[in-house]
Image (cartoon, rainbow, N blue to C red):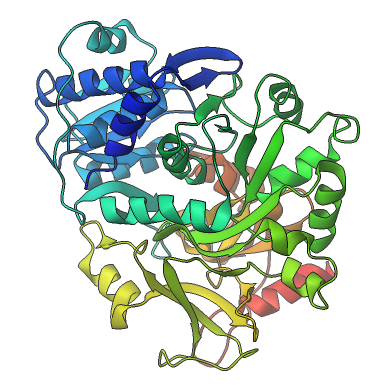
Length: 505
């Protein structure tokens, strides 16, 4: 069971179908893509000397080559490690080192700075070297894999301040792919997915169902999200779907073009990664039509915990329609979801507890982290750390996201990760980080600081410290200097009290 067979199948049965676009420009048909992938896989095993199970890092901004490298990695029986290109160099190095990746494929701007003890080669995907890997050599046969062999190492920030690599198997990815068809949307070979969101995360996961259907992959020329470009691409592609954080949806509907653009070619926006305000959801449907689907998932169960379907979005006659719009939908076909108490016992409808999930999409564990694996998967359920409640119809409403996690622009930011960097400043005695509601980004990062007696600490100094160690999107947007942090009788910082103080300022 090698998920690369999805491309082998499409490359044979749909060889003439368009597979890869950059903007409006066709880069490869499915037949050509399958041949290029098999050739690259041969070089990975031959010229680069990689063995089955070795890790290959993808450190790229969105680009059409992403699909080639991802499938070639699997075709050769290797493990893909897609890494967020916006991470700080120190964070990139940690992941490269932790996975012992021997080869990295990278964007031109990132390639020169990549290094790690086990890293033997860094290949710029826009370089002649990359082109040479396609220019000669025979296509390699697909490497057989067992269902539980790791295919994708999905790195997600952990509450310990160090990212953890969720091991996603070929079985996990195939179950996720089939669940897309069962719960999210139908796809035909005439459709396409546009990768406005990072291909290292949710948008990249949706490469698979679109390859399974021999639908096209489109990478915007900007390699990111721009509302004007979204609407422009709708004029040259049909059956357009894309994955978006709620903040992206809001930016789209706030665009001056939203009210006058022709959205006939827009098929589906799958949104997730944070809460969508009901008012924004309604407005998006008014401007764009009945084209929204919501998913809730984690890297540990990629894109597949619950789904709020297009039908549930548009069922305005249902007496609980607004409550359903505020929910994250019902469990995906391939998983069970439960809300449990502290002893992992199921709670009654309406009661609030931790969201647990089990099924074919749940990771096999964390890479080289048995303690974290045991904690997350004890009792046979994935403990999401998210707090929610189920209603009598099975709709899940989230009350909090991963306890104290901050979700800004669809990206998870864990407070302790930021706090540990701030505490490196010799003038800081204590630091506590929380999220502040923001109409554009969902939340922004705010830090409360207690200084050492007699110390002088400036926001500028803390800005420089954070930029030296963290990705820019993780740094606090504001610093509040206080005499003391509110704590309970065991010494735990009361972040609820900090949120109250913030709301009063």
